[in-house]
Length: 349
Image: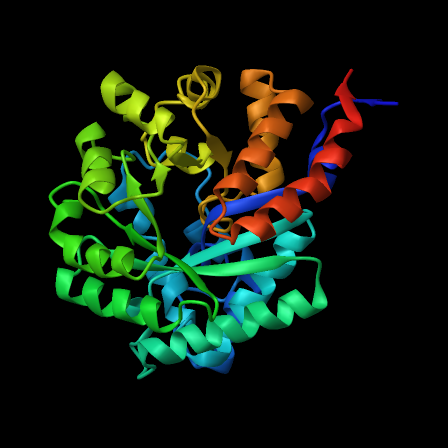
């Protein structure tokens, strides 16, 4: 018999979930940042936790993606050693497991972690070490998405694509293109994505976050995107929207960060509910847990607060997320079977 439940943050925290869009360098623990800075002799702006929180965490609109990305200059300072990357990856997976996230895809760009002499390959080894230990210690599965950066040269993207190929079936599950969209079109990086696609690796691109639907068009038709990061401006092109819907190209939606960057004016005008009701496959994600000062539980609760989503909608979103995960089909099917029966036991009050 179905259990009637009231949608609360505590209830949402216990629901089995998946997170597909989460940046490692935006999701550190604040206390660990300070501790790691002391260990690695890194000069942070402050070692006072409250002051550092005010500098790193965003609690209001910053009106542009470039302004939002400035905060990564601080977090990246403490992610320049293998030990720091291993710790950050492990702690992120632990934090996710405490929200009953059963599968987590962690994304980061190895090229941003080489200031102290680490090679890009060493960065992947370090992140994998942390995630594998977390998988042993907690009820969670993980995968890595390697990111090219739009504003860094396409040659670097190609080298990072080669790295993804080298670690295929060894923990890397996908390739992404992140960073500022305007003046840095995805098509410039298509050689990297050609290599990725020729090696049967999954692709997701940040697109339609701070630039129009033509950015999403390039992500799909030049770079073969299987998923789109954000995609809030997809609604401006109905024909492309229908293409995305017909081909079940999932949208990795991040409500809080979209409001903070000014991609949307406020939660009420976010297209998430419209996309869901139209039938698109939408997923909920944090983007950056520390910088956006959020959790996946909070993102789900925002959907309840602003769009009146209940257990029926959340079940569809959760299962759609697992269907869109960069996992082998059999593994996805097993996970969905595992959670579907549990989700069926609830009905909203």
